[in-house]
Length: 348
Ligand code: PEP
Ligand code: MN
Image 1: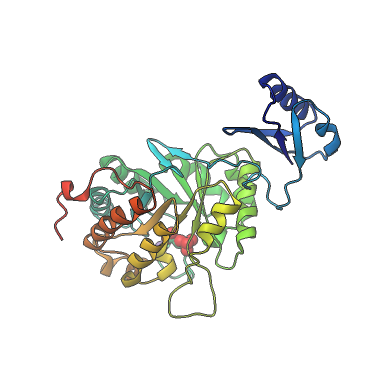
Image 2: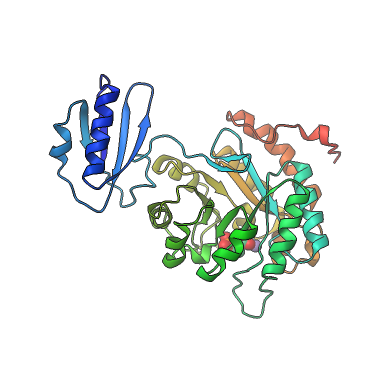
């Protein structure tokens, strides 16, 4: 439920209401706006609305109608900002995560990391455990891959995101990566989500190939209800009847999620398009639509990549895209990578 305090409620009254809710076994999230305080309340116990309505300073008690509670905007009206090192995801700045689909070699990780850093990315992406449709495709280098990615991220002062596919990998991946990525195929792996609810690191939750936005937010709820508030959503395209692109990138998911949830939402135009000649267009559209960030596949030699080469950008294409995003982001009141690219020697 949501407890809306009256505009005239005193601090002592707000504290008393919070104390009473905690006494009733509930978890409370306080949001103090310019004029009033709103309390988001969840818990296993069902409590009578009237019990709270009669407390001093309470203006209104509303039930949260969405099936997801902690993920909903009504529970927490203000945007969640996920902090990873010195990177803030969900704030004014559009954050770009970029790098190869998979870690292949040390040289490839370093060259890709250098290229994305130079263009303004803040987070290096790369998989060491790969969820491939075919068991005969490259499955990733496991811990060796994580080590290569970590070294490359450190060498270029980048945060690192890497995919976790299974419960048994959480501890290992947590030792190397700064953000856990849950892939589209695992969006409803509820045991994995529950366990990540106890993790001390942020989780990027990709939308499942066949998931509705409500199902996706319910999956986020599994992580949030375990006590991990640092969840970032990622739209990466869904499966539709259309076959011209690998997936159908659902641009409308960005404003829909922004309305329904306080969680940051970023976009993955690489898996949305499935081909590199369409990645920039989708990336630009996602930023214009209000995405808090992007995750993009960039490879130093995409034509020889062991996975997703066709959708991976060449570094020069990524440079160009970042320069375009630097024009789009301010048009909607956002920042993106403080230093202008010209200062970094972008010359395409
Ligand atoms: C990936 O990021 O390389 C990946 C496998 O993504 P998705 O889970 O969206 O298919
Ligand atoms: Mn990929």
